[in-house]
Length: 117
Image (tube, rainbow, N blue to C red; front, side, top):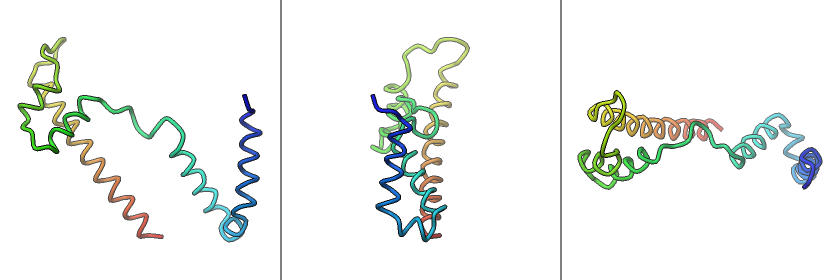
């Protein structure tokens, strides 16, 4: 198994050779871009892991399914603990709405930063 530090040093040396002119023009900006690209390629992804029920509910909603159909397919038949079925349905709707809003927010922020440059 390769040494992580040695591999990183080789990668940095390659970047310095291949992108010497960009580094000379804006070294700080270049480093930020490299780190952003590297973070995107390595696990874990941003945020908490996605819930399969919310993912499936979002897909079904996009297909035009009713909430009644979504509840039947995405929620367990018996709700355990202190949660009522109505509360569980409410939480699923909130999670779907929250994911949709987060997607819109991330999309608008990326458009804003792309237009800024």
